[in-house]
Length: 428
Image 1 (spheres, rainbow, N blue to C red):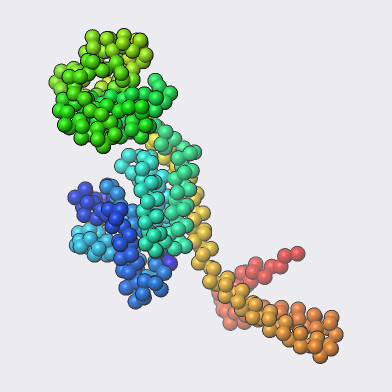
Image 2 (cartoon, rainbow, N blue to C red; image 1 turned 30 degrees about the vertical axis):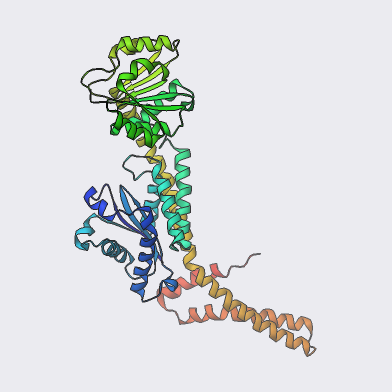
């Protein structure tokens, strides 16, 4: 059996090709089953008897087939499966695929689970996506001994990397930076009321990050109420018009704004009145708009903590640098765990040999034991029978190695002469 990983991602293929290979959660099980059928066809075996393993990970940035297979040229077979299953021209698909055998496949799985192969370095979402893919593969009958061990160890490595390095400790997106900066002001976002001004893509992303912390309330203020309500519905929030802000701004502890307005929406006077109504309780404000939505003078107010898009960009840059510094440490952990896993695979490869040795040794033991019992039944001396039993076992165990040594010549005989004493070195 050979382990392998074949696929493409955001570094090897454009989105136009990635979307052709993308599979929804409801499609993964069938694709896993088809991959095992494909391998079995190469061996001329039925699925049930093929023993090949398969799992497929598909996200917006990657589609990957992980497999353990005994077919000839399993990498080529896997690559051809991806082209066949998605009805693509193999010659056109092949240049965009990475085809990773054995330890390279293990290393890749560990790096993917740890967030080192992601578009956003260290992002944690991929680990959950991989766990979902593995769960689906298991339900589809795609997991066996090899892939089960591969993914369980991938999850363990990801946990080790995240808990012992700084790979995920710093903000690397504007939305994440907003959350982290607000946590410097408030111990718990869950106790705060949050206002988002605008309903575009950046606001939607920020709202999703804050919603994950379950704030007391989320409000969307937008010039067009219908668009605000559309976003609010997805977040279990409420929507208001921009015109309502002067009357309710004081209600909010966290304000994030990003609109296309050419003029500031929150002026110094408006914010001053809100702070007075709040009895000077602090307010966190993030202005992600260019031109700015919040007048710069607002930053001078004692109880307002205002961050502009440039401030957030600096946080993101610092976070990226910190994560990059953690990569070397994470890679060292992964290399150690890859070596350990490959040692386990090596042990698996000799299991049949060990089983055969046990079986042949047991047959010899039973034959000598039966001979000894017959001698004892005839009344032979016990010590003499035991002596014959021990000599018989020794002679039979050494017969094979001695014959091999006699038949060997040259370098092979020298290798056997060095190896046999190690194999038969007794424990005293």
